Length: 271
Ligand code: KIV
Image (cartoon, rainbow, N blue to C red):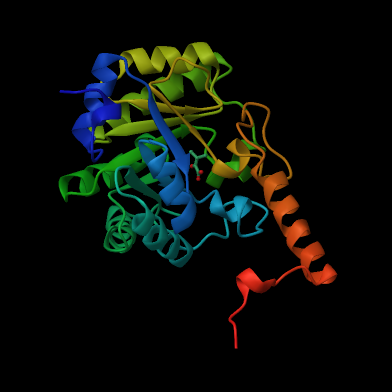
């Protein structure tokens, strides 16, 4: 099997092979067609239609108000822009926790919208959901550590697994989601050593966010990664200044309109 960069269309077996080969996997969130097309062309392996769209682009305080309709609409747009990347869509809060059947129905909506896999939060408690979906042909990415949909019970955005009991629970949950059939696991806000240890003990790839360099891949919310957020967490390095570039383009446009410099002859239709 060739390396990930040579793969024309990312599928589950390529991610499994990357884990075995020690090759890093890249994932970014995307919520619309243009950004999906740009990240896809840049070689991003996975595009996550994350429920982080709630805070990142929809103006909500957190991910809890995000609806299945929000995720389906964004999935349709991202799938239209993605050629090579595997499109993973988040099941939003309230759409999967109550039962495996509920979870299947919600996941089916996202798969019909163009998702190639779904992600949802939780460990052993959602193992029946993971097993049902995986058995029914819907690949599942699990999500442990800080799980934003549980922000109210976790007491805010906090690193998880710092004490022995919560580290032990995290280890157990990681094994439970793998045993249930998850093809990959997101580890969010987990101490570096623990994330590396869990990664070494799993056959499936781990994708870290605020979990240090020892995971099999990394994910960032694109607006944090590209300098489009008002605020970003300390682990989210800015790799660009897209917000500043947009502001400067909008201000140049406004100035040209006010000056009468736009539209000029080159941008008008002659009589
Ligand atoms: O919704 C999201 O963007 C996520 C990432 C933080 C992993 O779940």
